[in-house]
Length: 498
Ligand code: BES
Ligand code: MN
Ligand code: ZN
Image (cartoon, rainbow, N blue to C red; front, side):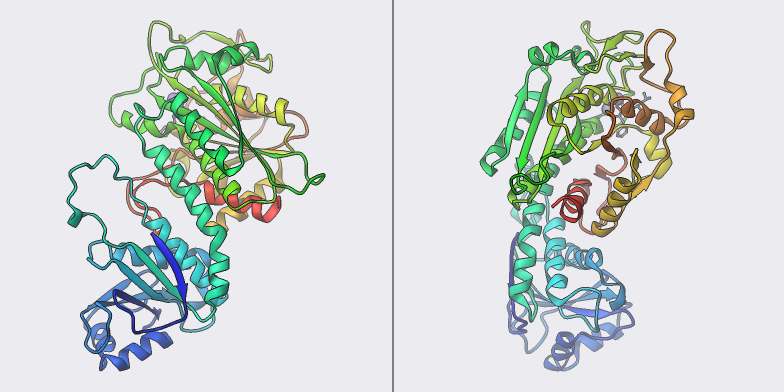
């Protein structure tokens, strides 16, 4: 999608989109259009149920006396509630409303009916961001799709009196959107295309943005003693990889210790010998969603030249059953020296993260460490699809994450940790077992991760199993891979570590 900004003008071709507040009050541009069309807007509203509710739309086709092919009335809801997330929802709603139209361009007059919490420029920039995010489409494997079935919309112009400031505000947002798209591409790709070696190659492409990329193969991991990650990988013909992506954007001699982001990158999770049922197993192509977010985030930070030292580490494995696969009951030794009894080979994400997190701390000495993982089905039982689970050993970090999530519309819900839960993963023969029973399954998984957090490191774990894939369209996320976490963590960095 091509995005541009301009001063308000009503003499444009294509779709012309104007705002209407809740209750039906027309924005100044809508008012002028109504006059120019001899009252077509008022009549259309009178004969519909459109009342300006947030993200509702009403289309007036081929209006008289204007160049536009159609006028799209866009409900803003209450102006006082029109914050950044709501503004993004308007851009998303416009793209969705034009989905089946033949118009190649949309021109949006972003003038609110009354004062909003946003400055004019930020309103316009967020509308643009929402339009871009909603326009994502993963269609590379649809070889016979007719052009008539593809969206026609190619360009969005957002008009505001402060167009220069809007353009400037949008600059970094557009870079973050590119990171979001990369993540969505990665989680959408099937597991015969994205496997550890090919995903490591995708990480390498970030070098052109100035990211330093290091890839460890299985020999190097064996030497480092990563028995836990390698135990998961051993059943697959696909060789594992551990990748570090480093972005050093902080001014020299300042904030040297990085923030570390660790991603679970199980490129396909069959469950291994504790094999999963067939129904919906195809979803497990996106069990590398945590790694996908870390990769897209590193791309976003580098592309917008964030003034931060950040490192992304992704543990890449495929979890397969085979004669080489690890068995229930096997005991593995992690890089940290702690041993784990593998009761269930389908609880593999924590085994991968245990070594990836330990290595990241040894190698990069981060001041804070945030891991992301499609870790448990239990988090979906607890929170459904509208919050990711947040676990943290540090209240300040947890609060910052919650605030960042609110600011970008990727909400988190904090879950408990504690010794009573930790007892559930005690093993009779090893330092711990890899499952703690069905009860509190997401919490016991997090307890295992916490055992691999070194003293003095502020740590948070995001269980994104419920939010990584959308089964229906959301305001700025078409159904499919969401990239939940990229915008949130970009915001966390911008607000706290730059
Ligand atoms: N990748 C799954 C978790 C998952 C489930 C992600 C559904 C997305 C959607 C994870 O590796 C897993 O299999 N977890 C098990 C753990 C259990 C064996 C303790 C689960 O949640 O059932
Ligand atoms: Mn699993
Ligand atoms: Zn998994």
